[in-house]
Structure formats: structure tokens, C-alpha cells
Image (cartoon, rainbow, N blue to C red; front, side, top):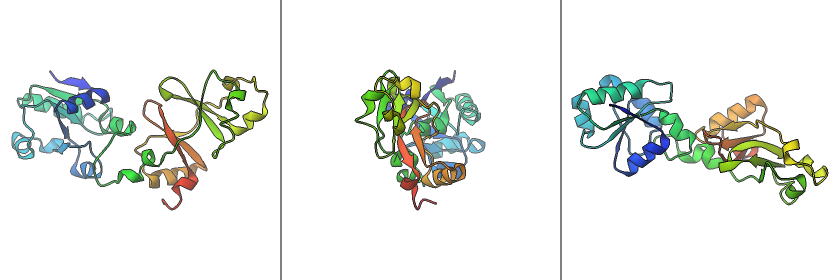
Length: 225
């Protein structure tokens, strides 16, 4: 029976020697793929194609496609099992889940051009702190402090104007919820266009689970589009 796998499962499986198989078209694979993955587009998946690629049933096999709504990985995993593979995993979140965590990829898109590589540190503060606690962090170069919770999950941000309030003012009372964020996999060119279109001068870079990775400003993207 095909087993379903999440990102942490896939990382453990690969470390233990599992093989990765992307079933998207070759163009998508060339652009970006999980490290060490092989590519057999689903319409071309035959025993002969598997043998040519060096993908055999003697090792656990993780099949992935594009995202959680793409059914190619589920269908590919089921086909592998029908072809005699006995230890098969469907990576449900697939490539976007991997990219969304800022994990390494291979392909034609250089890692250095992605938001995850461009993101830089930004001051952080806790939900239960007071404005007086932030005065050594605000104002900073970017005039903000990102409010984070457990595991650095972004809760909101506090702007530098808050330091003019009484020191006992709760961060929770001045927190601005829902700051704009992007995943680390977006390219600088795509991000620059998006920020231009939206008139934004900054964006937070977070994982798909909301964990803060850093900040990118329009100035950081100068010349990227």
C-alpha cells in the first residue's frame, strides 16, 4: 500500500537511502527539483524507463509532483506499486512544500536569486513584551520589529513609532497583524515585480508554516527586474 509522506518524512527517508522520483514534465524538472531526484514524466513511466533511469524496486521510492493539489504523485506512486515496487511513498505536498521550507534544490534557477538567499535578519520581539523592552531594537535600519511566537512563527510587527508610547504599553496592543510575506523559493525577479505592482517597500520571508526567515526590501532587489 502506498504511504503518504510529509516534508520531514521525506528528509528522513532520503537520509536513510530512499530514491526521489519527480513525475512532472522535463521542463519543470530542469528548472528546479529536489537534490538527487530522477525525472520520469508520468505519461512515460514504464518498466523500461524506470530501468534506464536507474530507479529500481530494491530501495524505498518517494514520488512527488508540484503541489498538494497535483495528483500526479499519487497516481505515479500507485503505478509504481502496480509495477512491483513494494516500498513507495507519495510526497503529498510535493515540490512547493519543499521549496516553501527553504530547503536546497537543484536546477537551472540559481539559489542565490531566490528570496530565501536574499532575506536578511530583522529585529524580533515577543507577544508578551512591552514597548519599553524594544527601545534597544527600535528604531532600526528598517524601522520595525517582527513579533514572533513559538518556533519563530510570525504574529505581526511593531513599527518604530511605538517607542514614543509609554514604556508599559503592551506589544500586543500595538501589534500590526498580517504583514505581507512570501516563501523563500520566489525568485528576486518575481518578487520585485510583485512589490512594484503592490506598491510595497518590504516583505517578510517565511516558510510555508509561517516561520520567519528574514526581510527583503525594495532596495535589496534593486536591479533584479
